[in-house]
Length: 353
Image 1 (cartoon, rainbow, N blue to C red):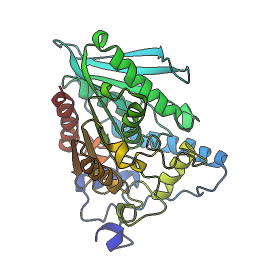
Image 2 (image 1 turned 135 degrees about the vertical axis):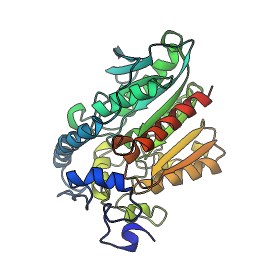
Image 3 (image 1 turned 180 degrees about the vertical axis):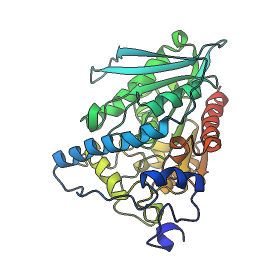
Image 4 (image 1 turned 90 degrees about the vertical axis):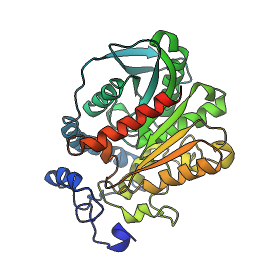
């Protein structure tokens, strides 16, 4: 046993598996100890839960922006912002941030990136996401960031399936405009809540008959089980790593505003881990990357194993010694780890051609 399964008092700062560079980066912000538990439960009035998301966005945004300053700034990449009205059931405007290398010959692979934040908060315009997309673009890709509607915070509140609809519409827009964009094929990628949406988009596409437009899927530390308070035996990391940088209660609160009445708790387009074997069958190639010290680690690994059993070409990847999203958040403290994860996304995108 590891983590809090072996020692209930264990923290991310004392766990011997923790990368010491990560601990050193988290310590000045007091994030190396037990993550503070929210003062409310999933049974609290929706207004109180939405207020919790607003507060979380302010607090989390501050330290994420601090970490983002260490993400390398690349040269030779241009980012444009295209506001387009996507034809679809919601009739809303979706902002796309399109980054591409200045010097390129012919059509390039494209990554449609869906940002993290539990589908509830954060923005594609945040510094870390902007710099991350440009870093990827510099490897020879077109990278499209999607400003989807959140279930809370500054870009909310819009519950499921609003954000998913925006992401799907953006993927379809890129696929339709491949020639104008100089795109050969596209990969959907994202982390945490964006990892949920990344895995949900192909399920939506399969139901609606446009799965062929997606060449591959790369999900990092996906937020997909909707079982965080159950802490079931098949997801031991929920107990092992609880309160390591994030907490199960906090995750459950975020999930509770995405589909407040629970009416889609068994829907793969809301919570992808609920997918049946038949729904998994026939999906495009996937990579599922998880962090060793993340409460969400095992839901990502379980999804990967289910994909393989369903006959989907899939790779599972564990980033040792890191907290939830640590390989992406801590570029300054762990530049080699950040670069390795970015290379993996880029290499996968290029391999799909």
